Length: 423
Image (cartoon, rainbow, N blue to C red; front, top):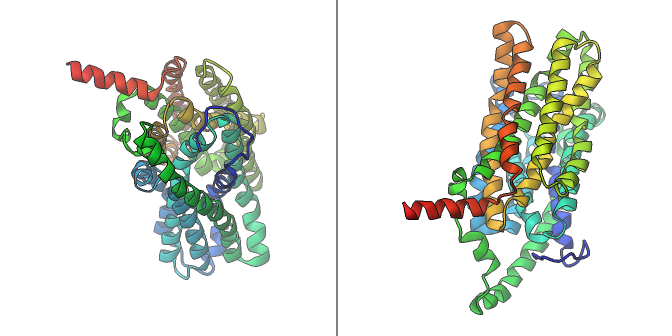
C-alpha cells in the first residue's frame, strides 16, 4: 500500500507493520542464541572443531548468498510472500535445531534458520518503502532497534535458560517469535493478492501495476554501475567487518591487553553489542534530517579511531570507554538501512540495492575475523589487527563524499545506460 502522503501509522497496513517488527525481532536470534550455549550442546551432541568452524562462518556466508539471491525470489513471489517464506524458514529452522539429535542436523537446521534471516535482512528495507513511504525514518528506526534487541536478548538469556530448562529449550524458545511473524505476512499476502486485480485494471487504464513496477526493471545485475550503490555497500561492509571481527576476538584481545578476567571480557562484549541501541534510535532520525549524510560516515570514522586507538595504546586505562566508542562506530549499519530507501526511487530499486549491499557486504565481512586473528598470530600483537580495522574504515571517506551529493541509484543507472547507447 504505497502512499506519498502522511497517513495514520496503522491505516490499512496493520499486518505489514506487525510483520516488519516481528521479523526484525527474529533476525539475529538465529545467531545470538547458539554460540553462548555451545558447551551445553556439546554434552549431548558431538561437536567437532570442523562443525564449530562451520557454525562460526555460517552467518556471514549465508547472509551473503541469500543477499544475492533474494532479489530473484522477490521478483518471483513478491515482497509479502517472500517475507512469509523468510519467517517460515526461521521458524522451521529454530525448532528443528532445538530437536536435532546429531551435529549434522544441527548444522543443517541452523543454515535453514540463517537463510530465513538472510531473506529478511534484504526484504525489510523495500517492504518499508512499499508500505510506509510516508514514515520511512520512524519505521526503520523501530525495526533497527528490534534487530539490536534480537542480538542482545539471546546473548543475555541463552545461558540462564539452558541452565534452568536445558539447551533445547534455550534454542527453541525463539521459534515463537518467528511463528508469530508468519501470521501477519499471511494476512498481508492475501490482501496483496486481492489488490492485484484492481492494480491490473489500473494498468489497463495506463497506470503501471505495482507488481510489474517491482519485477520489470531487472536492476540487480546493474548495481555495479552505480556509485551510490558502491558507497552504501562500503558503509555497510565497514560496519559488518568491525562487528564480526570484534564478536570473534574482542574478549581475547581484552584479556591479553587490558588484563581483565574472562567474565569481565564477556561483559564488555555485551557492552559492545548494546551500543547498537542508541545508534539504532538516533541515526535514522539524523539521516532523515541532515542533507549531507556523509557527515555521519565521518563521525563513524572518528568513533572507530578513538575506540581502536584506545584499545591499542592504553587498553587497561579505560576499557569500558574504548569498547563503547568502538561499539558506536557500527552506526553505519542503521545508516545503510535508511540509505537503501533514501537513495532509491522505486521498490525495484530498493530490492536490488538491498540485495547488492548486503550480498557483497557480507561476502567481504566473512573474511574479517580470519584476517583479524591471523594478523595477531603472525605479528604476536593486536596492533596490526586494530590498524587493519581502522585503515578499512577510512574507505568511508570517499563513500561519504558520494553520498553527500544526494543522487539516486536509478538516475545513475539511467545515465550510464544513456552513455552506453550513445557510444
